Every structure is written in structure tokens, then in C-alpha cells.
Image (cartoon, rainbow, N blue to C red; front, side):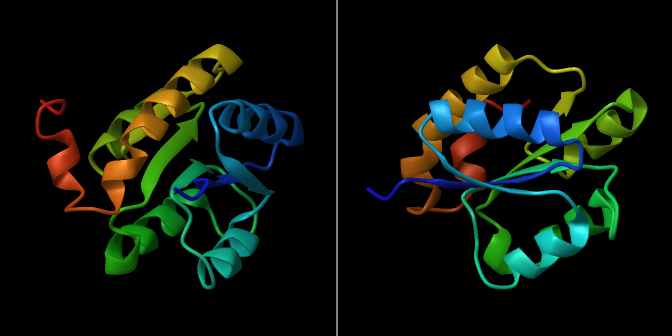
Length: 138
């Protein structure tokens, strides 16, 4: 099985590093970018298994990027974790993102979440995405 790839898009360097370390601890190969434009260029050439996306980004905000990604069928199986300090906006995004994390988030919370995601990774490429969550989603 290949090592799952996580793309971290966060403009706060210290948070990006923490997110990348937590995901690496859970077995992901990580790539970190600090703006929406670079993320868009990366996603034109690769499809990561997981995208951790800050909503408030310079050069093409995360809201727009998230909306565009969800419109494209080749990203349908990519797990998306949205990170935001805006709790109201985070609640609005629960229908679009797979998980919403509210800042501040601890390293342990992200590591535990990424381990849960890693456990489901083998199923991501074997069937429809929605089948993974039939038992867990309300």
C-alpha cells in the first residue's frame, strides 16, 4: 500500500508545521503550502488523499478553493479537513467538508483524527466515498 499523501494549506507557518508533523506522525507524507494559488497549482497536477485547508488564505481564499474542489469528480474521494477560527463559518462548512476543526486545535487532536483517517484510507480507493460514512454520519 502506498503512503497516503496529505496537502496542508495554511498561511500561518507555525500552524502549518504543527499540522504537517501531526499528519506525518499518523503515517502521511505531507506537503505544505501557504496560499490558495499555490494549492490550486498543486491540485492541477496531483490528487492528495487528504487536504487540510485553512479557510482564510491569501491569494485565492479557502472558501473558493473548497467550492471548486467539490465540483470536480476526480476529487470526490479526497478527504477534506477545513480549519478555521470562525466558528460560525465552520458550522456552515460541515456539509461541504468531511471534518471541520476550530482553531486553536491541539497536536494530539489532529494526530488522533489523522489516525482515524488513515484507518479508512484503504477503503477510499475501493468504492464510493459515501459508503465509508453510512454508519458514522447522522
